[in-house]
Image (cartoon, rainbow, N blue to C red; front, side, top):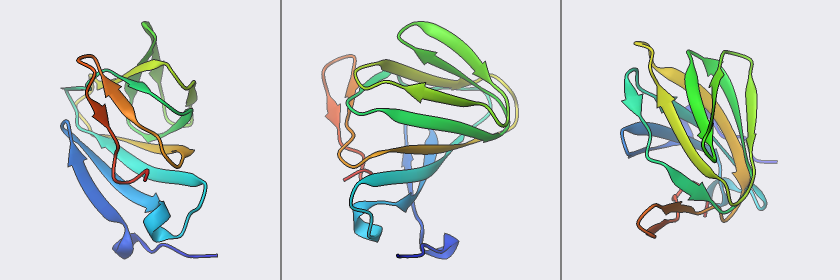
Length: 124
């Protein structure tokens, strides 16, 4: 079983957020992906439709998650399950950066409102 050290995690920046990838196919995972998402204070996420189920677990700060138009505010220790095919947005109205642990299956894609498909490098 591979161990991914913090110093080995790969950091990606996209749409004003930071994604620190731990469990990925390139780090030895065959089925699952997991990363830390950092959402800066005062930021609005880009709405996108996910092709695979995701689980968000808020570790620090606060975020508002919009799933198919329904907004829920998460506090540390809260989790949200985002079903495959749902449209997702993540916003941080607070001043401090929020930290979210995210897990999904290999192959997740995000489809933007204009139809653009993004295959995040931390999921393939």
